[in-house]
Amino acid sequence: MAQYELLLPKMGESVAEATVIKWVKQVGDSIDLDDTILEIATDKVDSEVPSPVAGKLIKQLFAADEIAQVGDVIAIIETEGNNDIKAKETVNEAPVVDEKPEIIPGIEQLPTEEKVAIANSSDRFYSPLVKSIAAQEQISTQELDSIKGSGADGRLNKDDLLNYISNRSGGNPVITKTVTSTPPIPPASGSTESKPMAVSQVAVNKTSTTSISGGDEVIEMDRMRKLIADHMVMSVNTSPHVTSFVEADVTNMVLWRNKVKNSFEKRENEKITFTPIFIEAVAKAIKDFPMVNVSVNGTQIIKKRDINIGMAAALPSGNLIVPVIRNADQLNLVGLTKAVNDLAGRARISKLKPDETQGGTFTLTNVGTFGNVMGTPIINQPQVAILAVGAIKKKPAVLETEHGDVIAIRHMMFLSLSYDHRVVDGSLGGMFVRRVADYLENWDFNREI
Image (cartoon, rainbow, N blue to C red; front, side, top):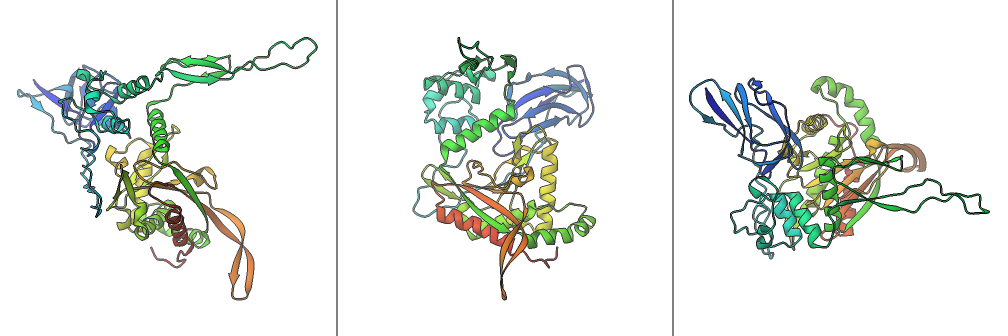
């Protein structure tokens, strides 16, 4: 018998580690080719690790909730044969996308993302996420080296660092919930009213789920919700948010889609929604105003070469994920439709690859899906702008004609652009969202697809 070393596969250029969620196969289980061995989670998506060989699982090298690095041996599989072999890192391997920032004249260029923030002179490994947090908190390499880690071989993970920062700044890592208890207090003499009890502070252990006062329930966030919460707080603390609004008359666009959707579905075997239309308009507007397609690195503005549009998608769990359509400006409407449907469909069943949520340069979120007419979205860092499109509503509107103004029923929609006021001024933000609206309003009703 031979032993096969199963490695944690490569999951994208910027993904260095993953957390073991659960083992699908247990020690002693038989394994067929492509059977799922375990489920893992990165800071973006959950993935399955299939087996490239058939045999029997004889050892699990990481327990649930432990973090493994890309290339670590995570399991040993006994196979037929006499020679022990090591796995090739082929599972979930994604193409590497070169995202070199454009050189901006007159501005000193910082190192690339892999080298930015911390010049790690020690032999200790730090993930890109840990490095990013350390850079934001101005933690030196020497200080980082002194922090005790709870990971394998003493490795420092995100939770270790956040707890250290909390204690370092005088905070308390224990989660504290404020709960209002409202059982009645016996009325004072001569009074017929009962008063609620005062607000109380309840310290909750991280793993507790308990009932308070017989009615309120404290629920610990799941892993993805914690990541979203951290990312949203970081974004608000990083970027001064400003939101501009435009109302667009999208009647021609709506009528055109109604006209072509049946024939399009028969021909392409795909449903055409409004999302690819919105993405096409955003990509065109970015070409007109490329300084919206940037990121900030200290005092540097990194102007992105590619237009990679992220689209926020709601998951059945209630969480959000943002798959990315790369080079959206290079796809026609058919290509955009297929990309949108594919990514949205696989997002709902947790089948996205880690690289498919990386590298976005601008984000679109459709709050109209939930019946909302507008929203003020939070920027998806390190981007500098995010567009929310609201529900399309029939409304009376004034139209200018050669015979005078008339009131007509039109399909109207609000667009809301939140942007980072450090680098996007009101004029640029306002002109950009207005240009997106112009592309939608001037839709060609006779357009062929």
